[in-house]
Image (cartoon, rainbow, N blue to C red; front, side, top):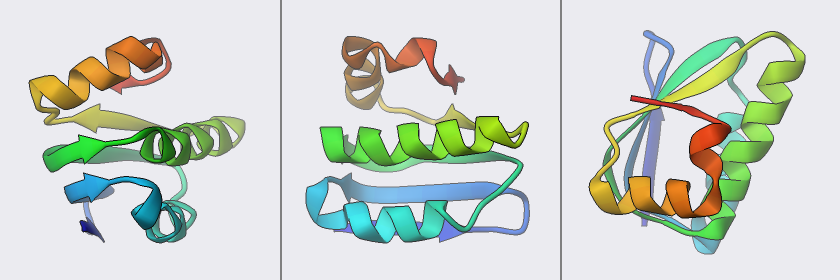
Length: 94
């Protein structure tokens, strides 16, 4: 299960598991952002390739308009997934 919320500070908060069963929900939320946003991973336990795809599609869309997403609060396991996929060179991760 994935809990995904947005706040007024341009931050998206992720909690739970971001996998294929939650990809449509994640797309809906991420399609509603523009400009530059921070995605807080501190509550995310797991991300699959479907979750990575949602984030990559969002990043590409935002880049076209001069924005981007910045990733923060990753657990070591989630960060390792990004590194193995080579996404640490696509996203700014703090």
